[in-house]
Amino acid sequence: MLYLISGTSRSGKTLIAKKILADKQIPYLSLDWLMMGFNDGIPEYGIHHLLWPNEIAEKMEPFLHGMIKNMLFGGMDYLIEGEAMLPQFVAGLIEKHPDKIKVMFLGYTEINVEDKVALVKKHSNTENDWLTNESDEYIRDHIANMIAYSKKIKKGCEKHGLSYFDTSEDFSGAIEAATDFLVGDLN
Image (cartoon, rainbow, N blue to C red):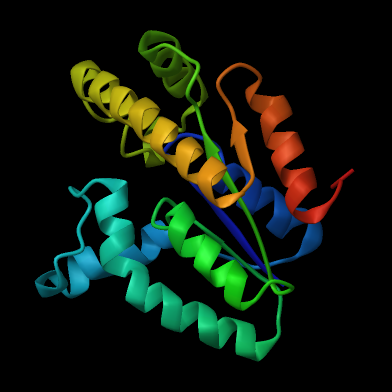
């Protein structure tokens, strides 16, 4: 089975991937690693960290399609997490491989910017966290953009019949429900 976790920055994607790795031993690949590989290694492809998530997803789509096709052929369980997958892309994959892919998206549509900024600052590891090393204005702008992006992702999920979990109000509860949906109860 190929498990896909996508959605917006700071919605809990990596947290879920790490839990699944620890509890189910399903290895995961972060699309952020791939994007930064393009960014730093082959900048002529135009895939870089300053693009909007949907732009990164659109540019990486042919690469992801080929990679996922080969991962499915191998028959092992894998998890891919990251922003660089759009609902319409994932819906197409599920249509081609309905019994081999399980997916869910995360976002936060119902939280105000200041509350989310406070949560980001409270729960981040500032030593290894690119966002919390930025100015307060930059963080607020990023979060505002991700709230808007969450709304687009949620709408895309509704259109394509994909599962969307909102971490706005009960972050831990939404993370638990999303993890349970994807791989079953970890407890």
